[in-house]
Structures are given as structure tokens and as C-alpha cells.
Length: 365
Image 1 (cartoon, helix red, strand yellow):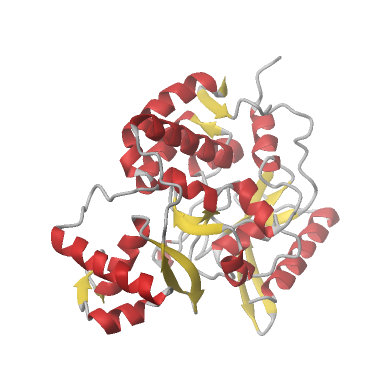
Image 2: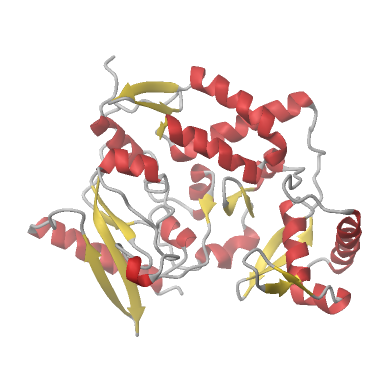
């Protein structure tokens, strides 16, 4: 069979993740991981991602339904939501760069006992009880030391997020049952499973992106770094692959980029900056021939795309981007294009349909 072309890769990259809308639990299970971001412009990234994949999804549905779903907030290649079954791949986890000293471990043990006694705790309850005070944060400012400690306990798998109270995490203690297999063989199997998870999430992957994702796994699974590198070496031999214009691409062995099923529809979709279709900026430029940038943290005078540009997809092409604000129930979009603006009645109608879907989606905020 002939190797896939770049056109095949474009169609495959879009169709494999923009599946037919389903239920919220099934969508998260199929995606494997949904990246979170707190910015609302016009909604959080996790909501903007899920609205294309969940039937009648409204902004905020994930947070409203979270406590009743079999999912967790946790770190994979970054922070987000994932099926609970994946926690056994990530924990026990220890921060390699800044390990806790004995005093911090004692504080964590005291807080853990407090959380177990209470069942669920808000950070302000922990601060009121322990009075940990303030500390210098990563950006050089001052932050609540209790909140920082709770974050560290969550990262290490001692706590889980049970719900959010006006956006603030509410925690409960975690019991890992049955015990996680942390033997050398168990670690190797977990590393291989994590690698498969990210490949299925972000495929097709240029070789450089696959290597980059494995480096990011040091955020979610720093204790498995050695095993993950071994799994990467094995994956390069086992995964489906081809070479296009000097770039090696990888994808799951049970999928075929040349499949005729990869036929994206006519809809226009405004995607979150962290949507799996556009998350990989290396792949983005290879597939669509222009560089997209996320500029929320770029000074306004230096922005090319805008504060929170949403890539605009139609068929298997990313045609441009939109910045969307909502005021008094009315959307105020602005659009940009890397080249000539698309024309024609069909495109305008499809874009109008997308703005109507966005209005319906935002009605849940």
C-alpha cells in the first residue's frame, strides 16, 4: 500500500479526533485527556474542546457534572481531566525537582489526617486550622502556603479534587486500592501504557512532537522517566510510520491514515487553542503551512492573532482564527486569516451556523 500523503495526514488528524458527538463520559473516555485552562474567552478551554464532541454541551457542564463522573483532575502532559482508570498509571508520584523536606512531609501528614477526618475540605478550612501563612510563589509574588501544600499533596496522589466551589478545588483523601504495582516490571508497563495514551490522543505525530510529548510526561510521571524513554525506543519500532518531505510521522498501529473513513464534514468549527486538532504547534505548521500562536500572555502591542484566538477549521483545513467576546447575550467576533479570506455563500452559511452553536453553548454559563 502506498505511504500516506500530507493531504491524507490532514484528513486523518481532523477526522480521528472530531468524532460524532456522544455523551460526556464517552467523549472524555475516547479523548483520554482534556486539557484545562482557566481563561474564559469566551469560555474555558475544556468546555470549548468538549462542545464539538458532546451532544448539546453547554459551557460549564463539565464542572457541574464532575462529581458524578468517573473522571479526575490531574497532571498528564499538562493539567486537565482524564478517566479515573488512568490514575494508576501516574501514581505514586514524587516531584523530582523540588522534593519535600522533613518539615513539609510532617505538615502534609497532619493535613492529610485533617482531610480524612473532615471528608472534604476547602483550602480556607485548612488555612483556618493550621495557619500556614504566606510564601513566595513561582512568579515572585506572595501566595497562600496552605493552598501550595494542598497542590503538592494533590500532585503526589495524596488528595483528589472532588468538586469545585466557585472555581476553587475542594479536596478529599485518596485511597489507592488495590495497591499500585511499583515494581520494575509494573513501572515499565505503566510507562508503555502512558505512551500509548498520548499517541492515541495526539496522533498523527511528527517525530519531534513524539519526543517532546515524552519529555512533557516528566511533568505527569517524573518517576517513570527512565521507563518512558525505553518505551519510546520500542514505540518507534512498533508504531505505524512513514516519511513525508523529510519528516517521520507516527500513529497507532491499528489505524490507517489513508482510510476512506477520514472525510471531514462541511461544518466550520472554532477550536480551543488546546484542542487536539491544533495543540501541537509543530504539526500545525507542517499540516497547514502557517504558524499559529497562543498570545494570551503576550503584551497586547505585540499580538498578531489576539488575546485568545480560536483556530477556524473547515473540512481538513484551518482557514484562520477568531476572537470572540460575549456581551449582553450577543457574540462579538473578529476574524483573521493567514491568506485570502474565504468567500462564497456556503462558507458564510457554515460560519453563521457555528456562531449560532456558540451562542447556544454559552447560554449555559
